[in-house]
Image 1: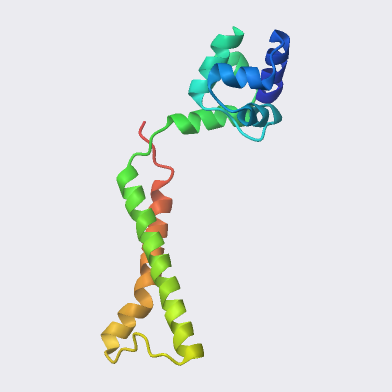
Image 2: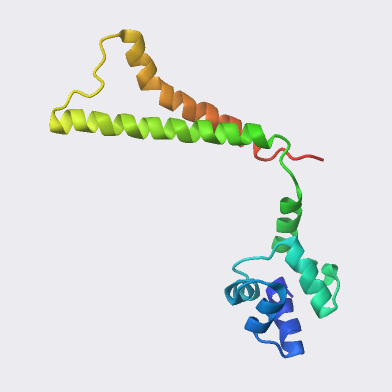
Length: 152
């Protein structure tokens, strides 16, 4: 039996509506509905509250649903280098923004006939052309290498 089925069975055993259960654990009725249909899963804090509320063990709620079990394990882990991960994510986004800005400027220059940021220096052209892409590559590789590193 999956988590959603177990939750619905326990709720109906008590004769509670989704609204009533939602009020008791301070969430929306839509959240309860999504949990029961398997579209979403609650946090570990909510699972503990549900366990207490229904008088069942957390093991009974979690053990049957492999996907929920993996989510709880994944959520309980902390990234080993969260600041570096944020840095690399930001670097990637900045590179993407600069690339988009460059494409917009090039389009304006081509279609409208403007001459925004037309440079004469060779070094400046190379930097302007490859910097956004370089930032995106470094940011993507760095972020990807840190996304699965957790504190043991």
